[in-house]
Image 1 (cartoon, rainbow, N blue to C red):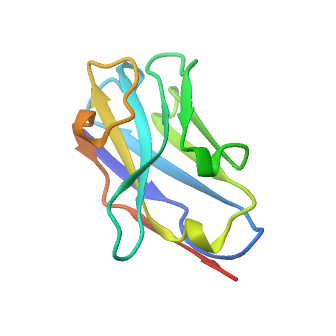
Image 2: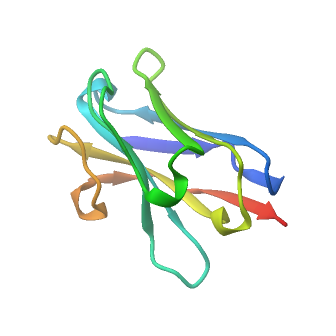
Length: 124
């Protein structure tokens, strides 16, 4: 499974970005997917996750609830992260991840494949 993120960049506080993660190499629908992030000097942390197949279940880290939205398009083999009302604290490298054989996963230990990451920088 290959995962390629895109859509990162520099944005002012209060702005928006949409990240994409293109998947290949397997049946995308059967993968549960997630987004993680890692800020400088900090450990990688969970951001949000979406269940496999229809993506009917979603989980969010408390700090991004009501600001970020995860979604998937199985026809395009693509995962999205819509980020609104961005804050400087959201600055990090954002990683897309895929979990095999689980309906949904919120722990990094449960993910089998990772993208290379895309930088998001929010200026104050």
